[in-house]
Figure 1 (cartoon, one colour):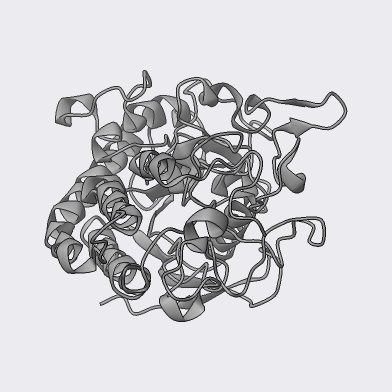
Figure 2: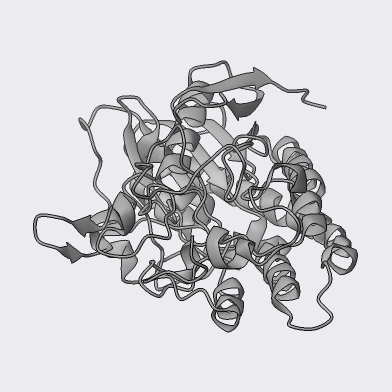
Length: 391
């Protein structure tokens, strides 16, 4: 495969810009979002950041092939008209960058409940908090807890599912630093030794998540839903990257940049996969217990399906996009003919389907703490759930 293919423009300089724009944020639906089923059916509502809003849901796998539809991965492309419009996937939320996709977790979860997505890409806990506790409009949208209170007043609610903490931790700056280290022309070295102290920020992330859960509980109480009348679930994040032993492009070579879209050193891949993501999950589990919420551990949900993982292939003339073979995470892109930079390293269409399957499995079980994993080589619907310790 030639290093630089049409439509990709994956130069080192451009990727620095692309990496700098990575956003582990949340995507929130407009407060005017309409229910999907009958008015007497309970609601399942999602709040928080980009990993639950549906960021990158436009893409069914990754491809280096150029041309319209990018080898069939671009769900915003209409072959009948030959046009591409991200609104086909993200709706009006594309205009303010919240990027709530039609395949977002809450919409991908099987079931007959009404679904409402109030997450927004880039959101920190402040975007969730009630105004009297410091909550403020984000990307022109009101506080998510405030939206929640108004939306569910007078309606039955089955569950409120929350993804928050990554942006409070500063995960974007960590990933940006690691990608930047890989792209440094001279004297490049792994970022893990310098970014390891990011773990020191975890207590602040825990506090932010607990505060967000408290305001969600308050908003629900004000809407006539006392604690215990609905399920409150805090979830963690799947790792977007494999460890060094399971990356398709071994040896810290630049095909990770030019072909794979995973410009990271071996040491950084292993650190992020084996240490950072699990530590984030453990901290959020603590926040769930402190905030009176259930916990859904997604830290290993994408194992073998991450961008550049040996268990996956990119779509091309010989490989059609497939939930069984394609990557479940959007590769790092500059946005030149390949969507937006902010979609990078977020669950793609298949990843969103997998997260939806995890949520459906969780909702079918008794309230508690669970971990979700995938079935190697199977479709995103073949997820499995197991109980985890609550202490």
